[in-house]
Length: 133
Image 1: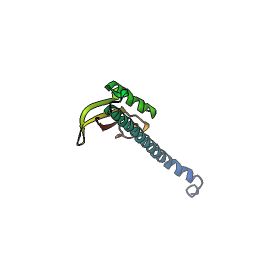
Image 2: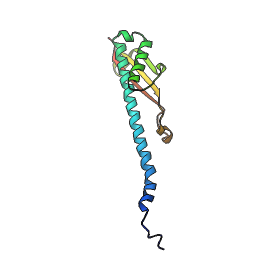
Image 3: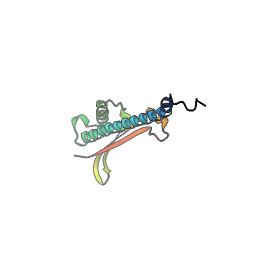
Image 4: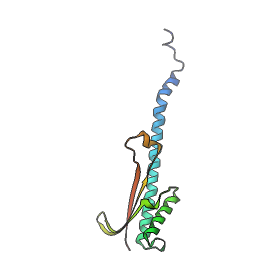
């Protein structure tokens, strides 16, 4: 049969098979990078808030001010978090060091990849410690 030997259009058919897998892989790669960037920005906000709290800065002399400081630092990276996602622990042990100021941020995470991958995280959690002054 002549139709089985025809080669025209073979590349288009092969592309139709490969393109969805390639595009899904590309989407997952981009979403993973976005998640890592967001986690890094949250880590920076937690570290800045822990330091601000530990050195007893005038802008962070209460838990409410530390929370609003962390929210503002996250907003500098265009990440919106609520003050309720920020937890402050005073004079705790971090690792082996005592008398540390600890700030934890647990923010909800949603992305297109969350629906595609069953093990994708639904929240990002970071913390940072700084020695009390």
